[in-house]
Image (cartoon, rainbow, N blue to C red):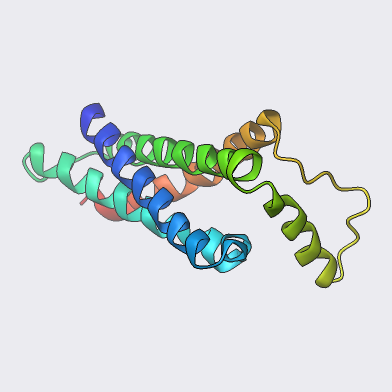
Length: 149
């Protein structure tokens, strides 16, 4: 069960990275768009559902909600690790200008950014990752509830 979750987590993580890189190479500012950012969750959810389905079929067509949730959440944890690693690498090494672009986009939307720090530090990325796991827990519960049969 755990090997399946790790495998699908890596696949979803790589899929997320490739998805974002496509947008980055089209126009680097596109990865700052909320629709692009949030649509990465679709890749994670597909990976979660595929992993739970695989584990369920390996168990003769049955899986408990608890086991389904463990599998789904582990896929989410791994795929978001890839996502956050990409964000850190992009903002700090590949395209540091993304921080300034993000600031300009928020200013254009009428937000006061004078007190905001747009540097992508390891602590900030880790906090974002940890915070995303809270939402991932609820998504995992939803996927597990739908997939448990």
